[in-house]
Each structure stands twice: as C-alpha cells, then as structure tokens.
View (cartoon, one colour):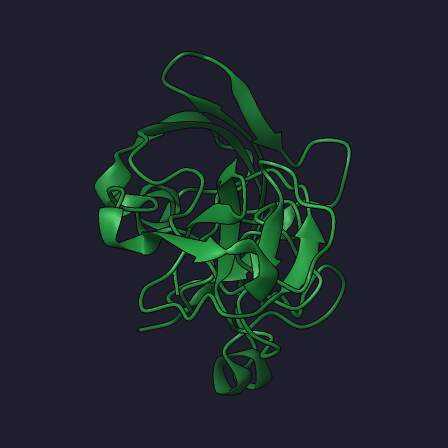
Length: 203
C-alpha cells in the first residue's frame, strides 16, 4: 500500500474554545503517513482527504495525548535540579539524550519541587481546524528513512516545532511541539524555559 506525504495548516483549541497553538503564519506541518509523527486521532481523520479540504476535527484524549497519569507526578529536592531560578511552568529535559522526557514544574514548596511528566494536553479532548495544502506520494528515500525530505521536511518532531509531532523531544525544544512520558528519572535535566503545545506528542 502506498503512503503519502501530507502538508497542512492547523489551529488547535481545547473544549473551552481557547486557542492553544496554530501553524498559520509559519511553515505548514508536513508528515509521512504511518510514521508516528502526529497524534493518532489527527492522522486517522486526515487520511484520504484531498488537497484543499478544510475541516474541523475533534480528537478525544485517548487518541491525542492520553489521560493524565498520577504516577508521572513526583516531588524532588530542589537541590537535585541543575537550575538556580525555578518558576512554576518551567520545563526541563530529564536527561541529556535528545529523546529524553520533558517535565513541567507544577509546584514549588520551600526546598521541594513537584515535577509533572504528563504532556500538558494529557486528559484533554482537542479541536483542530485544519486545511490540507498538499498530498503527494512518498519517495523511496522518505519511506526508507521514515520521515519527510525536502523543504519543510526532516520532521522528527513532537512537542516542539509548532506541533503535531508525537512527543519526541529533541534537545532544545519545549512542549511546544508537543511533550510527557513514562518511567522518567527526574534526578537531572536541562532547562527548557516556557513552551506551548500543538498536535504532536507521544513517545
């Protein structure tokens, strides 16, 4: 079965109508079908849509970033974190590896910090307003490498480049393209600063 490369623009809102992320004004999202680059519910809804299609897509939490997992929330001593100035909402990568999980500072109580390893959009049903810009057949090279090549390609993302990735946190990215994870070691990390969220995001 042939696989396509699809590019699209989107805006993302929660169930309350709050705008969470959008690609309009920047580069469109481009992904290879079946490569796990965007969340399952969105990819399923985009499958087979021709270029020029505009559609509002509802994605349940189970097919977006999943439900919140209380086991991913833990408290650590502040002196175990390699950052001097901490603020609620700051994000950190839990290891030097580019695929390491990102956690969010959820609370600061004296010398104790609560870190949340859930994706910021976990537990939320999401509403995407999308416009499909282009659909083309994937090249043999793209199929071999598992990602898009060319302008706007090489998308290895997840919570970072505008979003719609799947939680593959590259070093230097925030939860902006999306972020969360399981079995994280919160002993150390690298400061990421603040970020938003988009349509990407699983490990």
